[in-house]
Picture 1 (tube, one colour):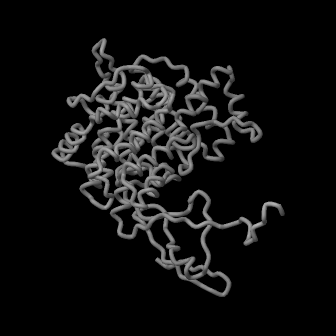
Picture 2 (picture 1 turned 135 degrees about the vertical axis):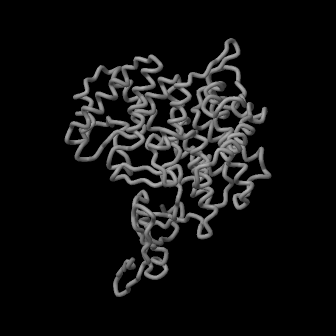
Picture 3 (picture 1 turned 30 degrees about the horizontal axis):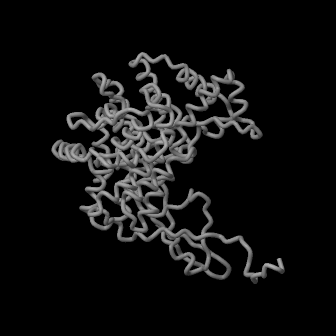
Length: 427
């Protein structure tokens, strides 16, 4: 492949080109500032690849998502979540014995230290679960000081397993605290999704039987959210990890990044929007007209994506899953009907079609979470549970790359030039 050439004034620089197994070509600009004294300006890093990755691949134009080369459609239909977690971390699908050993190691680490209850109880009952999860994840580092070295593969591996194992317990215990209910301990005879659902919804006064439809659907949601390239939260994990912070601190940064309404918080925003439409008694023509009005602050949440310029493949899967799970659970949710009609109206409107504003994964996930009994403010924390293997895989890949450097973006300074300090009585 020919190099790229940059000419700046009288100077010229050849920049080597690279090609991945799929997707874009990349021009290596590492020598640009040293040779020509210039930097690139790329708002939001939309055209910048910080490094190489083999974890996941997205083709936004064609609506393709691959985990380690496997299409998301196949994994969503056939794989268990811990199977996908293993695939993302270790690069290959596990054999039967490898998966059994991995699942057993996860089950063995699900229990939290008893005194972590005091951490949950230090928060107000109104605290958002994303803030509690980020704090609890960061606090785990204090319990396992012997496994914090990010350059020790064995330490990283056991810390990763602890994170995957303890995340459902941390989420469930934060919910129990916020709802003034007794904590429910993990049950080692249950699968990952089943164990989480029991810790969330069981109470001492009666037996709790996990609904297989709910467990299967939760597994599907976790698989669909497991990784998505260099998004905001994954980039945050990699950025913090590039400074050789431990994996607990790095993942906590990812949780904070995911909490924003432009990222993981969008699924909560979608449901709140649908509820608002119903409460206001708005017809869909009015909703669409408001969404197209630049002077109206209303935004149609759940449509469009930073990367996808086609239908989000995860949204295609969840569209069918939403109808199936509500039917199986006997839930007659007017919000699902509203969402379906809103999608139909929006996608028949030239404004949305021309701008390629298709429904994304957030459009349907919140409706499914609600049908399963989760409160709205927990939607994003469920997203975080699913994304955890991706964050871990991104962290491990970064630290294993001998070319990794601490992230240090440049800036184009537009502030005041050099000036002298002015004494107080002369200002």
